[in-house]
Length: 215
Image (cartoon, rainbow, N blue to C red):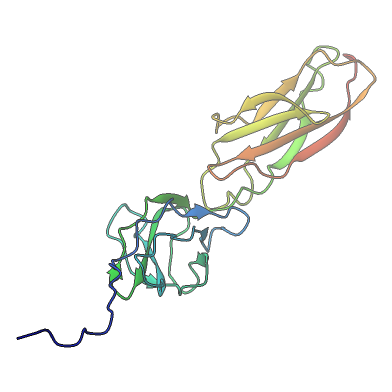
């Protein structure tokens, strides 16, 4: 009795699904607006021993409900936008992602929540008021809501004097007038108002006015 010839050498590398994505997707502010969400995400380096064949995007209904998906986004891209989906302006959408290799799908990433909206347009109808009743060196102005709130309600306003912030009223949505005080009589000032919503700050509405004495 004896042993036959040895078989060919055989090696085995354990393989598995990819690891969990390292981070949540990231909102790309400059590309996200009231109609489209745009995200970036990171490469999954723990590929499970087999090449990644797809990244998969999951998005909810904007009402903290069920996620759709997976929306396959290929193996080479590291960004995704919601073109082709019907989304509702003013809603917060939750997004997460995973990766897939020939052995299956990874665990899902952590989530990001993104508001589908824009900054407001500038406040309207800014004007000087009550010239006959203010103290020397004071200027009182008023304004009205922006024509376009950006798909998300205006939360308040920021007031500037010659480009410097003098009042943070970003939580005072009903504010519509303000008095600049202690100005130098005879000098011209630039008075600016911006509107703020959950996305950010609008362009400025402004007036260049002289601080006059009481008539």
